[in-house]
Image 1: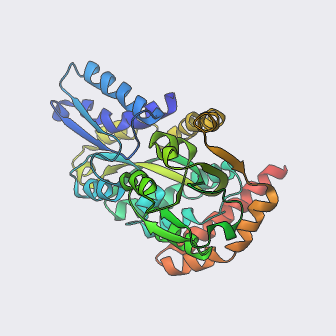
Image 2: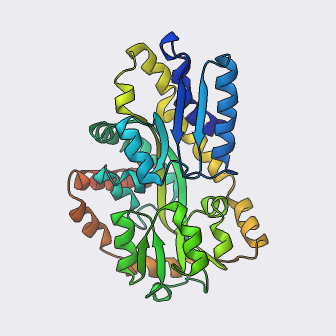
Length: 337
């Protein structure tokens, strides 16, 4: 929890940097719902900042997509209407083409490998790419492993998804994945998913166990398959329009520990893993974890999709993909020592 507190604290701390920020109102946008560790952390920040500023700073936290879906929040941050936000890599991919590479299915073999590559090989390249699109990168955060929820059956093999109406995140890479395995993806924002499940507009979705519970999507399904087909990072960002007006001395305060905050924040989210599965089971959800052979079957069904996605994305996507492969190789070599 301390790690998450540090991450979101930097979104508010600029208001205390100097007298220039006094009597400020800070807008922070996220689709993270109430009842999550992220929401609890933001409430702690609100109290801390308002207390330390003696009430001169007011923090307005907009949870659960109150400011719109991730794409709307992203666009408002770029325009400077919102000072900061927490966004998944899939949403960021709408303006930062190359970050879609991170959403390639079965790209990472473990959480530790993903951490190593993100922190050691992709940090500086993405800082530049973010800046070019009106965003200031602060730190990696985490959504985690995405799994598959369904209303009527377990998803144990690619054939179980043929023709299934599945909610897809609004991302070209996610849509490519579902189409590759012959599902029928429907792109929609977070706020639309639960009603779509309840009315049968979609039969399933993919997301982490934490988000599934927090958004109450589990109330619309009976089956949850732990597929871990996509590892999804997130990022905390500032609006560059806002950032450009901040004095250099105050920028250091804004950045705090920068990406040094990534490790404790990941630990906080991951520590909930087993507990979340127990909550799902207690809610009447049937859970199946793919065996090694079942997961390999999924991987084989989308073999080659990485090259297709990278080619279609363009920009510096090939360079980013090459860096990922280089990082994965370095991680494996390090693990053998």
